[in-house]
Length: 81
Image (cartoon, one colour):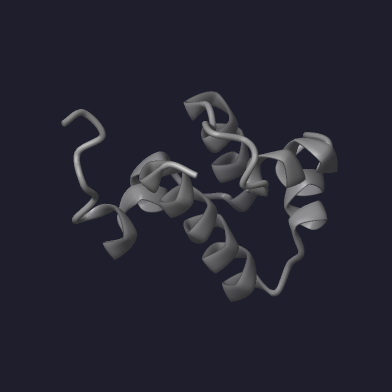
């Protein structure tokens, strides 16, 4: 799993835990299928589109700025070396 993808997954799990909701509830709130959310959480999937992130943020009632305003994203290693 890429470093960025891992941070995105961790952030969604953190937000779900704060709201006491399961990933399938996040899917329902966001108007997407639970399989889409579980696929995103899977270590087999390498990337998550910004469109999916935005849709999930909409379901949580937060902005992309709110989503990425986390220590998880502050010190990520560069993907290109």
